[in-house]
Image (cartoon, rainbow, N blue to C red; front, side):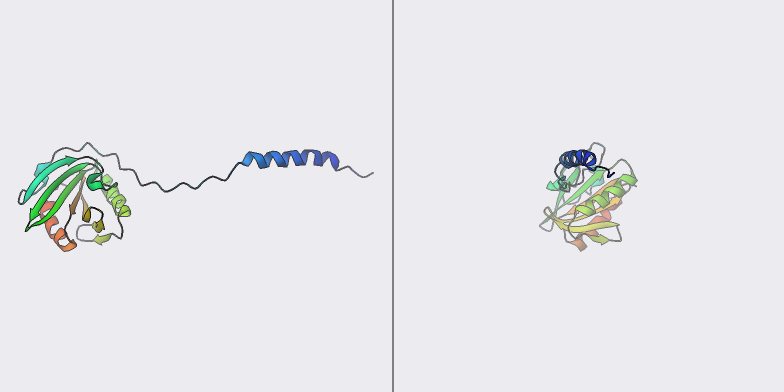
Length: 164
């Protein structure tokens, strides 16, 4: 006697159809999201962190600072020396470790960042102008609007005012 394969096929085709219908369409690949800003303390006025020579104004600025989505709220001071305007910024973090991680987040959002070894910071041209950023202690410091060499020179006094 030959065993009948009809009863097995009777269950195979409905199971195949059910399995095919339950799969649904292939998932759409998610578009990469820009990294969210870290959980930082509320920005407070810290005038003492900025040199007073050539300073025109200082303000607490909400995120995104300078229109750059990767810069959190902080302090922004405007300067003008020899007819050349530039800005200094600070962003306060909860810990030095958070500042260290955040500086890499900023670097990853910059286009063609250049490492500045003497500061452990990064320089890049952005939509807000040339931007030099560095981490010191629980702070991120930055200089906007100056070429790299001038930003590094200006950063010496500025960095000395930022506590560890």
